[in-house]
Amino acid sequence: MTHPNLTHPDPRPAPAAPRQLPRRPLDLRVRTRRIQVEELIVDDPGKVLDHAEQAALTAPDTAAALGHSPTAPLTLPAAAALLCALHEPGELAAMGLRLTLHTTHVTASDQQTEPVSLELRYGPDPEL
Image (cartoon, rainbow, N blue to C red):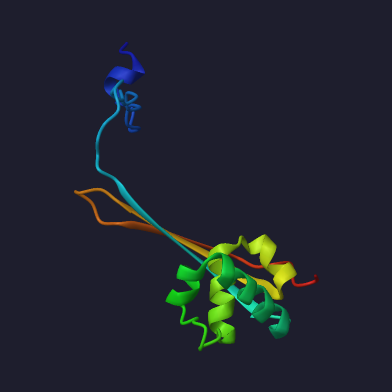
């Protein structure tokens, strides 16, 4: 009598041996790019403009890049952009801006493969 495993081979493939990873770091030249977009609503235009005028005094180069000068006050969109450039999203609510959507887009690639992308979106709780 023969052993059953010898006459009928097991149709399942043998488990693969675990891969051995190098013990030293590899320089794969992986590049990543992260883009973060916050979408905001202006709840209080007067407050936004007042805070932006104060911010223009502390960061005149940034304000000038947005079109601010002694003869040209900031427009509301430029004022919002200035505040967003200088402050964290959590601080903007006290300045008359409200976050409605946050999107983070991350792309990563090395020199040999196509880029891989991930996009994450979240917004505040609609019941708030």
